[in-house]
Image 1 (tube, one colour):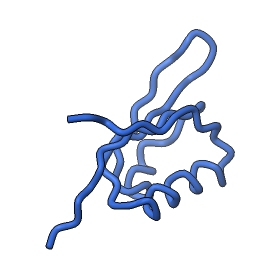
Image 2: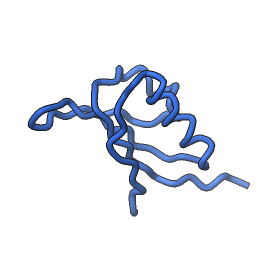
Image 3: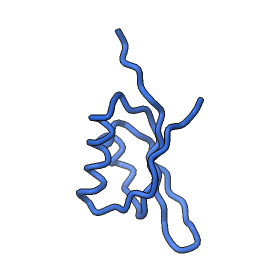
Length: 74
């Protein structure tokens, strides 16, 4: 049985190298400028809370400030 994956978007301050996608649950990485900061987003599907925590812990380990985590409605 295939595992259900929930689409999520995580936003954080800073620039994350695009090569990190493989290490972060194959999520797509985007960057944009706000008025004062560069914001990166990770967008993709997460299997469960454990995988989500792995992604968030990796960002935290490198001292990225997480702004939001949102479920994307299809």
